[in-house]
Image (cartoon, rainbow over all chains, first blue to last red; front, side, top):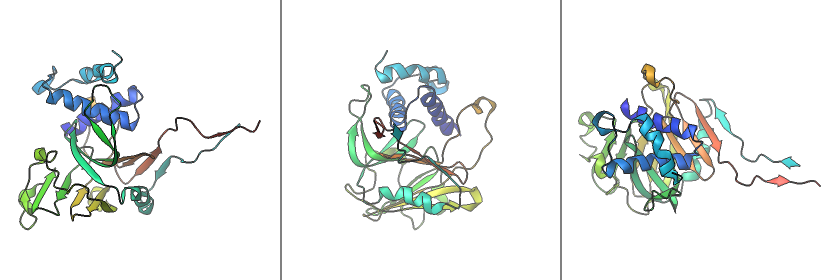
Length: 64
Length: 202
């Protein structure tokens, strides 16, 4: 199931960057917000790839 | 110096359905705030006091003190105030008659079909035996019911094997994170205390 895979990828990124549940939840909403705002990734159907999602952590945290 | 551990992490067996119910009981009486579809088409329901996002990139976003996330699992919402039913991952063509008019899930954020200020009056986890997993039912004071069902187990694609396993649903509260599934397992991880209670004996 593709949706589960997407959520699992967010979980993996959250684990890597040591996010707690609340921050991980915000990060998922942020990636969704980027999509809704028209940002496109280089994956199929304009989806963000795993690497692109991972690269969004610093901007999400305001540390870039 | 001693450190008191007040909220130990819990990993429990399927026999402890009562324990799971006890953790979820903190949601009873909380006010429904809104529904939001997060990344991966994941429906989240927010309850209780609202707080702003901590990320500077989400200035308009609010979050409930209590959040139920379906983690991509099937769910079904039957409105208590309108003859409407909305679901994801459940084929309503087979069961629609008598349930009410089907409602598209994309409309749910604008009209969650749960009356504003409705309160949670019961939270009941249950075992879905054919799927060997936990479901949960919420009942609201306006008569709405919400069910989450566990996800059917699937074999991972090779590239997904390194990804972490996902719960069938989760419940975030000020006290910690409750994960139900996969399978007949649940766990509770308490929120890390920013300033642990310490007793200095000196």
